[in-house]
Length: 139
Image (cartoon, rainbow, N blue to C red):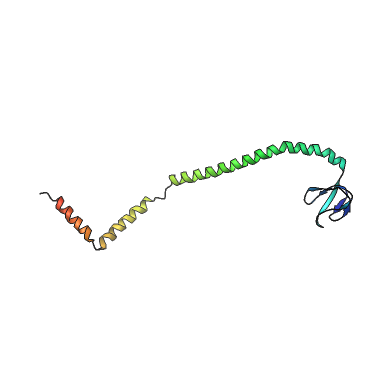
């Protein structure tokens, strides 16, 4: 088969663009569309008439399969995202951010600090303590 370049004057017919893998139909003699980098090959009409039913059959068979494959891919992606979320949440429940040893050690340090610092008492706190002392004494 002879290869033609873009903007070359050719006869009418069907031409296959080898770069873009597209078919260009020319109804009258004239130049081929595209840039200088595009290469074309002429497709004989008898070959196209023989290939058309086969291409239609391929289209009819594979179009539904492509649709089912796209839906399966979408559902699979959503299922994986859901499973990752569930695993993340259960991992958070199984391993809480709680370290009992550190809590114990920090509590004893706070207690020592509270004993050493003499914070001024509030007037309201002193009044409440006096009232509680009066009610705690047996008569």
